[in-house]
Length: 108
Image (tube, rainbow, N blue to C red; front, side, top):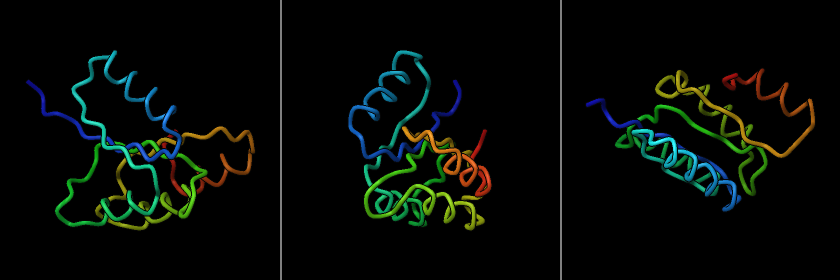
C-alpha cells in the first residue's frame, strides 16, 4: 500500500473548497486534504518545523489579509518548500495574475 499523500488547499471560499474535497473523495485518491481559509494561517503551518511538507498545494490568488501571490512568493523563497508543486485557483480572468503566478513559480 502506498503512503498517504498530504495536500494543502488554501482557499477562502467554502463552496470551492468543498468541491475540491468532493472531487478528491470521488476519485478515491489516497490523500489527506488540509484546508486553510487564510493565507496567513497556511504560512504559519508551512513554516512550522514540525509540519510535514505537503506533496502539493492548491492556492487561491485572491484572499483577505495575505494574497495568494505573496504566499507563493514565500513558498518559492523557502528551500524546504521550494520544490512543492503549487497549482493556482482563481476566478480572475486577468492575464497579469496568470503571468505573475507563472513568474513566481506556479506549477502548470
